[in-house]
Length: 123
Image (cartoon, rainbow, N blue to C red):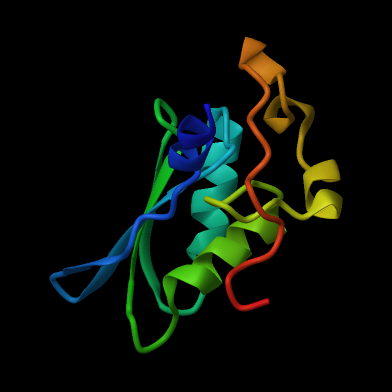
């Protein structure tokens, strides 16, 4: 059971792709509104070239310029929008401001497990 919990929120390391790095981040997003919110918000994050959320597995794939940002900064940005990002817990005030359709249990989805830690590796 513990290994299942650990693997469900384990952080994948960025991989080099043409013109930058790509990272896959597990989120707590559940619907098209979540997808639009995350993708639109990350379009304004310095260094992010592309962000695409797969709603089937709730994984956000982000391609970014490594000289302008990094995976941990992107994870923190996701939490400030109101979603869990790998092992980082979402910001509760941002979550409260999300539309009802983006809240835990909406659309008949199971309530996501809370990430294993509330702070990032840097603090």
